Length: 113
Length: 110
Image (cartoon, rainbow over all chains, first blue to last red; front, side, top):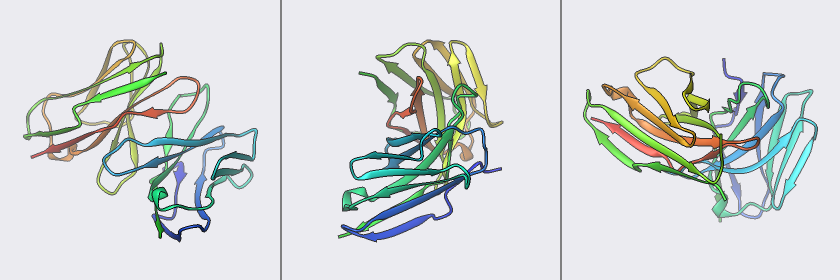
């Protein structure tokens, strides 16, 4: 059973436009959500996170939105840059619980110059 | 600041040979430690996690094992590698916040 789902395996956007990466989850016990960026042959890099007590968190060009009722979160990148091209993973965890971070399968973002 | 070291970066091993991947974390104490695997074209699969010395939880039945002999040391092992063990192995740590990853080990079993 896949608890964290990223239904779009890939996304292509033009430089300067907005990139929107989506993620759905099924476990209502998740209360902390994270986005990671991964280049080939490297470990994932933590980007941004959001607690379930918030519905939005912003850090520079990156904003994460959380809709708890829909069990949906999204990552917005504005403006998109060619260096943003990577695989983006959504992850979720129940804090104070099993300490297991559950990942989606990732979305490959390509930003075209 | 905290850093995580994982080695080797790449490894080619014959089927049936043993495996030992090591990971150490600096700059923190009593971290949660994790081993993940990314198989070709797939997401990140949690293999093992540890909340303390000698405490190992296995997520997926497999040919691998993990040990935590010291607070900031996590080791992934196998007695006999299978072809299906090939993949990108990632060590990670967390402590009351995001999980941070090492640079990974590309294991190819031939």
